[in-house]
Length: 199
Ligand code: ATP
Image (cartoon, rainbow, N blue to C red):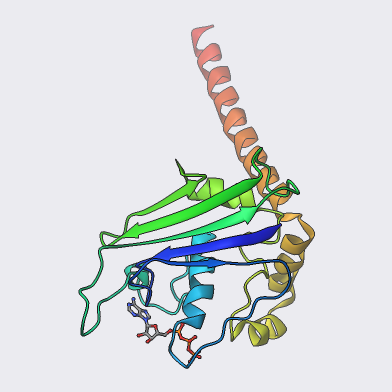
């Protein structure tokens, strides 16, 4: 699956809309210190559902919105989209191209979209689980991440291997199934209580 295009508007230093197209092979982004190279990887991580603002090098989630400069006023919202070539069908959607979008407002409200349809964060996680792009995957490795992975505890490192091997989604589904089973058992025992009261 190829990341074909990256679009951002109002994210961190990108006050104007930027669009970057990626081809096959390796793409390198170069620029002077502080020009926004890491902001691009932050944006990619963010749109894939990152919830830890510390990982995104901020203090609160609204810090990802363009905060203004000497020439420009701060913006009220930020939006990032990733456009994937899904012709290999890795994402379980019947489209050759899949666009994932995240938007945040200064109020702190976040919105997620898959192919321009509003969805929940959970839908993004479900879509990406097992593709190597999901939560805790190694698709984006930050500057301090390599040390962190090497220093991780065995259980934490195991989560990375599970995500890379595509097991996470099954573990997630198992957790959901067990929760439903537990709810059903509770309902069943309530029904049994009521039945015995009536008899
Ligand atoms: P280096 O090569 O030093 O790692 P870089 O090219 O990776 O630098 P970034 O860390 O991506 O640069 O960008 C830092 C710049 O982004 C800083 O100038 C900072 O002021 C700006 N920036 C970060 N958050 C915001 C924001 N919310 N609004 C406006 N500018 C921001």
